[in-house]
Image (tube, rainbow, N blue to C red; front, side, top):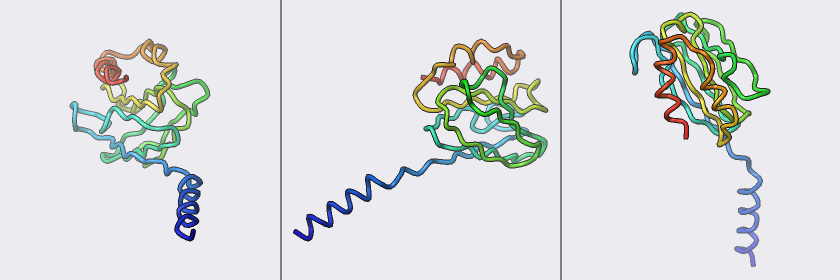
Length: 144
């Protein structure tokens, strides 16, 4: 009987302990995978509750939500240039980000949270500059 009770306690603890959220590191780089002025990685898939630590590996970068490229009700993000920031993602959907100083050079990233893609078509339809659109096309191709 004692082993049975121990198994019941262990099972109850396993069910009651919440899953730990993950934190993904995304670097902002002057040069990296995909060319000049890039996020590495530029495509990230998360579970609700996960976070991204944006690390300005090369100074002079920030992260900002691209208007129209976030789920309804999601918090707008704009970090300070040159400062590391952690952003938690609770709302499922598709998020587009840019580096404000280098957006014209195509410095963008795409984040997908959870399985809902309710805002995917709206995010795809946001008007981008030529270089940003060129980088977004293969990122959107990764959204399943």
